[in-house]
Length: 238
Image 1 (cartoon, one colour):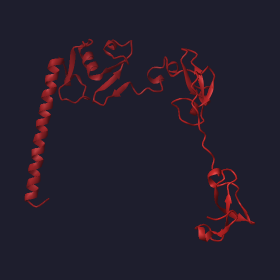
Image 2 (cartoon, one colour):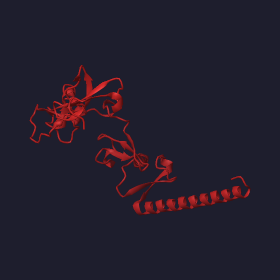
Image 3 (cartoon, one colour):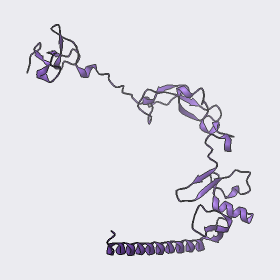
Image 4 (tube, one colour):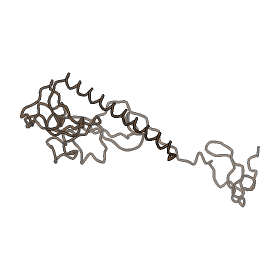
């Protein structure tokens, strides 16, 4: 173990070979370490760990906020641990309170619902044509209260496209017990000639028949693939 003030060349330490290093003690934490020697004295008074900037640790404030209070993001529970400033804002229209970024409060001082209130269709920035494609393959269409088929919509104002097409074809709203079946089983092919109205029990039977026919077709294709592979193998092509 070297003593305080001992010097050594950097080549022996695996550092810069032409520099001289001295064994010194950190004035901040008291840790002993090799440091570059200049004019017979340590060039740095503190070690490398003490010279690195410490990360700011934020403590979450649990007290109830008041209108106009400003906090850092790290002081708000559930927000990123950074220093972005947020202000507790109250919507002047509906009174909804929420943390909003301080830099955007002059532009967006209302809540999201009040900002988009009255902005329908193309006037709304989130408008996507009023059509949604579900993961199940079906298509839903947005309707509005002045539409004669609005009673078929769900709570969000959307209705399945195939039900809407069939209702428009019949000239009336469909009942809840009425089901619309696709003749070719393609859920996006919503034309009147490809749809017909049935009840739930009959619709389930039709769906089961389609599944059985699809399974039989898949089995037939697998058998054909197996036969072709065996022929190729027999002819030495695989």
